[in-house]
Image (cartoon, rainbow, N blue to C red; front, side, top):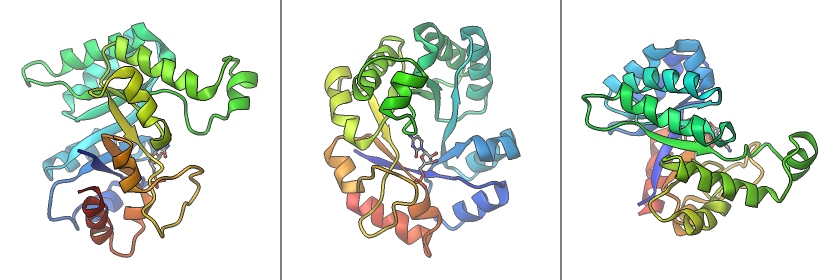
Length: 232
Ligand code: C5P
């Protein structure tokens, strides 16, 4: 099953909640750095109180001990999914899982933890010349996905175009969370490589992350429902 995550890319909690309050069903919402840094844990609590699931997209990347302690705090917020940069290495990712487990004690399950392999803003040239990582960017992303799997993570953020390859090398149970989704007929905005919800489903993506095609639609609820219908 492919599920939709709505990216709440808003500067204020009021705008995010105004959007959510139009929905008459629980949704999966993504809270990113902009909203979390402006509103803090209060916005997580407010979205949870309304019965929605949360992907807290803060992309942690620090020494293992710091990531572990930070994840313990995030798990205590009772979010459903968090993420790290795989570039922090296996020990850091293992520490993230330890922190999540500790912070979820007594709750029965910990938040899912997924890894960012390479940012979609990183080009082949940047990877090799600036960051000084040799090799082809798609192969590096796949290697990072395998490392994340070894560290015990639950999945990766990747492009729809990489999802099949990643599932082939990491297994079907390893989650692929894919942004860059545009229903046919909608604007690409600043996304370079986009795919429709239906194509994402055909590629086996577990979650699609959709922002502006829903949040900036004239009728966000209708836009969301049309995507859900396309995924059936
Ligand atoms: O509005 P749009 O659908 O383009 O939003 C996509 C969301 O997914 C944004 O929150 C963006 O930051 C996030 N994202 C992305 N590409 C990545 C990782 C995250 O577009 N590689």
